[in-house]
Image (cartoon, rainbow, N blue to C red; front, side):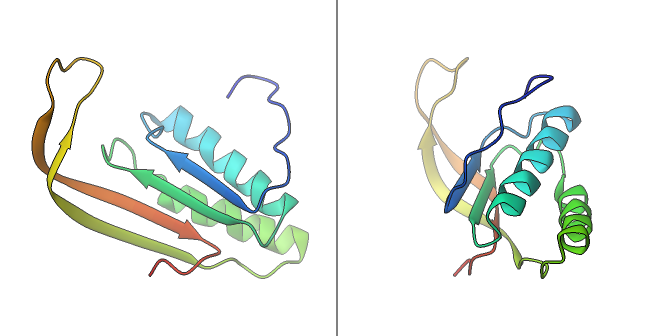
Length: 115
């Protein structure tokens, strides 16, 4: 995230995937999500996290509520979905071969219908 990040450009869709490794990164992600939403209150935001390293949902909701009051904007909808992908095949940085396993994925949609 850096100490002095460049401002996010206005966007219709923000996608955050596989970056919630620790509390510091998760807090930085929350700040950037709120920044993107303040820049364009109609933005659709998708956050996915298959590793479930940290739970940043509470902080995200609090910061969006604060911003909605300060910006005089309605609170965006937040849909939290947890699902299991059966027989998922993937690999990683420290894994030589593909592995097949069941994985739980957390998906958060902000400002969009998750269905």
